[in-house]
Length: 349
Image (cartoon, rainbow, N blue to C red; front, side, top):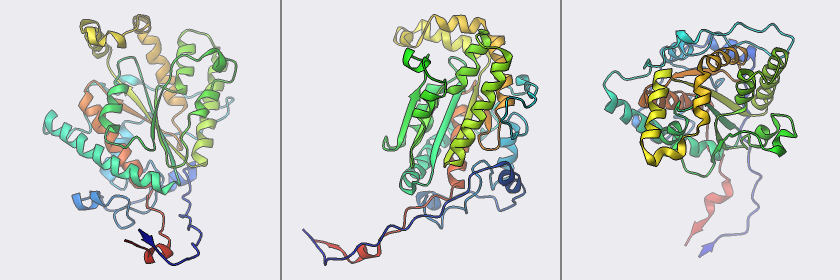
């Protein structure tokens, strides 16, 4: 039985707003120097409390200088404040510089140890997501983009599986329906953007609209440049209204893709994953690699930067993504909303 005196409950105090990244704020934060933060087990258990988390930073800047330097090595150059279609198109990046078999985030202690680290990171992300949902100042959009069999489904299982379904949602993008085709190509994307306190993971994304039509020459180079500008502006708007946009390009080799597609054919329980269209897309491998090289250069912005994830190793792929997502969430300075003083006097009997 709940007994309490009649009280007037004060309005809930709002947590302070945190500015979202612009070119100026990111540039300023890059000069930040601070101690390397390696939370202890006790600190991790208290994730979300003001004492255990750093002051808010732009989401994509690490307090750990070594991690920041490593992270930048796997980004497609310097983020550019791009927008207008009339702006000069940047040259495509050289994807050959990013070896799909690399393991830059590996502990160096073997696969079993790296798997254990992924499990620990998944639990950290679960704790942080709990505070993220309660905080409600932010929204998080995670984009997983990559060739067929690059490991988008595996990333969902390995990185996000420990999170409570409350406040986490996955969207798997397919070819647009007739209803969706009747509208602009970003209409359906915006409908699935995260709400306050929500984490949404895109399995594929709006970047399919600057891949498939480009490779198949359904749009002109001018329309391609226009779409890059539209996507940059769309993501800027999301960022400036409280959405943290984290983009991962899962980068696998052609040989690794061959092996994974063959595994699907050799195992009857995986036939449902295989589509004959996958072979047609594989035949266009070089064209898709060039399309990725162009979009990565054109849409790597301060408010929504790309990270190229070497993904031939499934364990390393999960380790790298989980490490960086934890860093992004830590940077938000998440905290539970302040309690109502009147509730301190309530006793449950």
